[in-house]
Image (tube, rainbow, N blue to C red; front, top):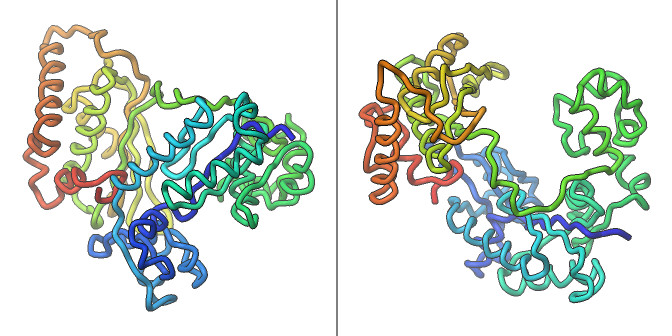
Length: 409
């Protein structure tokens, strides 16, 4: 058994953290939900007791309360959950120096070389579980495998159902456990891709694993090759703590509190997103030349929206310039339908000390102005300097300053 890589997943993370701090809630059905007054009242996390009533993540809060009238609803505290996630990383680093956060409640760890200190892979997994439970009062499920993709699928499909919360998936049992699963259970296969695969007769992960590679590459190129490798349990990516040390792009997305219908409202949201993107770009001393605009229409519509990109005339991280291009791109493709969410992404990045000189504007002066504004915000708060449009009813800057990941700190 070559179980050198683990995926550590925290059960019902947000709800479990709250229960660990409120012992009186241990035997109560608890969910974490967004603020229903701002139309984002959906379930973010449900404890196992709440799940026994059929409550799942992402369902509306009103539906969850209908299924369980005695449901206890708590608002999210994102800063608390981030702090606990960092403590989890510190615990894992006692067992190995190769720990890679995958999400706020999932982390990879490579235990190769740690066996002489802590025992067999299974013994290490049990020690990790025990340590997390003792120090954080949380329950961890652990998927084990020879690589990251098998450890991930071991955790998602088997460890969560295992009595001890630990499961190994590798070449020895991939054909008996993984391959019979429906194709939508394969890591990297979403709802749309599963329909495409089923359309050509691929209904299980095993059928994908045995499909001719040239056929998959013909239909989906590199992605088809990656899916074939995943189905066969191949993954060459290492566990590293440098995953976020480089940036392919910097972006932000905003779900609006209500449907924005006028160009004036949409421009306010675009400007605020551009400000956030440019501020992050300057934090890493990066400038970009490609702007991508994402839009999703009203929730009342089943489909709608677009994702388009445009090239700038030069590399930049200036809010006003990025906003000019973002606005131009958005209104070129917007069909006039109500807008529910907007996203901005800056890519094709390089260090911002490389400046394209311009005879008609002082580029260096504007660059320094952006950094000066960032320093003021860092010292006195994000809302110490705002664009005037953010004070309009459509502005969300003050609310977003109180949030992490779209939820209140």
